[in-house]
Length: 440
Length: 180
Image 1: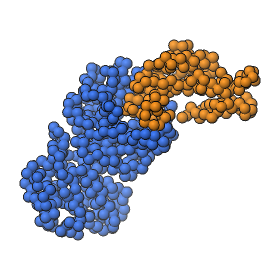
Image 2: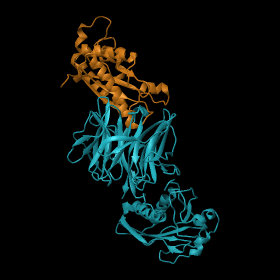
Image 3: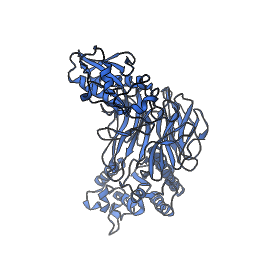
Image 4: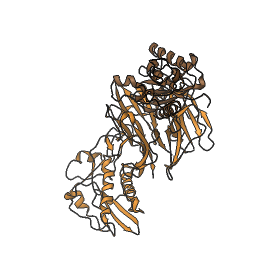
């Protein structure tokens, strides 16, 4: 856990052999996302069998499972042309030797059926070299609209069983969709699957909207809107897309909201005069209380997962730096000491790391550090990266990257906490301020 | 940009109430700031001054262009330069002479900063202008501030020449009475 890089645990002897055509496996199939850098693990994922009414959907579901798994950078899909065995029935016994011969470490088989508007997907995961099934076969069902979620659930199971980590594929992201030129940019809230599918707009572009944040259960979104003429925090129910401004906010302007871990309150920052401080609000009673004081800019608060501490940014030292204080306030401890400025800290859902935006020497970075400020590691570098948000399992970070110049635009990317596997998240227009919701 | 549409509506209303002489639109009309206070003073305007134009000292166009509606800031700063103070002295004087106007001071930042910090920084800039105007005698209840952070750049290149113009506080005036 110290380095947060990738390796195969229990397969140390196998590591040098991974590139070889055929290898004997010494232990159970297992990827530990902790140390060392590895080659992606080769997996065999034959098209899921149509067990009635599925037609092309079986292939599409298989593709989403494959995209989820290979998209992590941990797995490589062996091309179908290399297969010796074919899987034409979900029930047929597995010919392990045929899969070993093409060096498949894992085999995933599945079947899809559609009946009465319901899609049913079942799958099995095999540890090819051990010659055993890894975990039990499972079955998921949903309405036809939910077929992608079924694929994500299968992929989450496979990922989880092989890595021992929680999955993150069956999750959604709320973000700001952007269109138009830089000096007349239109912004509206949107929600999508983690992979960019199923985009749905939650607001129109009549007012500036910024930095939406999911509630812990994914049912609500808090965000900053200029609908009233000043930045104010609004709350929106995802189910019926109804929103309202929160009452009794402190200060002339309020922004940078984030839910408490129990979802009943929020932290936000409010400005009075020249001064910006952090406040807590209980949503049902509307009661607010100041958590910081003093003339500095204090903003971007984020709770530890257990709710006991708050990480935030402050320029009390003369430049933006990261601090941690207890949830009730009190004297904070500075944790960032490298060159440059640090902002937008976000506590990992695992509790072990803090992601942040760093600005240094004209470049922006997304980075992580331990909660005591040690082991700072920069994961990205560009003209402008900001707004990190954690995947539900704390292993991947999504963020926004703005390109330089008059034609500059913003889009979303993901990167592993190891700094590997940087890749764009497709969105219909520009996109910024992502907030990754819980595993559904 | 809601203040632009308000200014347009205001201009249109005042124009309709005063007269329909198209010459009332001076050069300042191009940015939607024509009309305004010139309406009342129009009949008595001295020769050569087109009421409502940037030459009419009682007009919003005069405030925006001749007095100057904005001041600029150094990187990550909210202190007022001597040049900014001169501009604000003019704004304060104009606001005192034109008591029927309210002002919203908009604070802005360039794109080189995180979104939240830039909102707070823009608030500091707007507040610096507000406090200065109050110190020069403008009634506090005629002034309001709002920060747009880096959300509303007027120049779009990613160079200092553009950033310098985006690090600004703009005093946006509107016709109306304090407390209304």
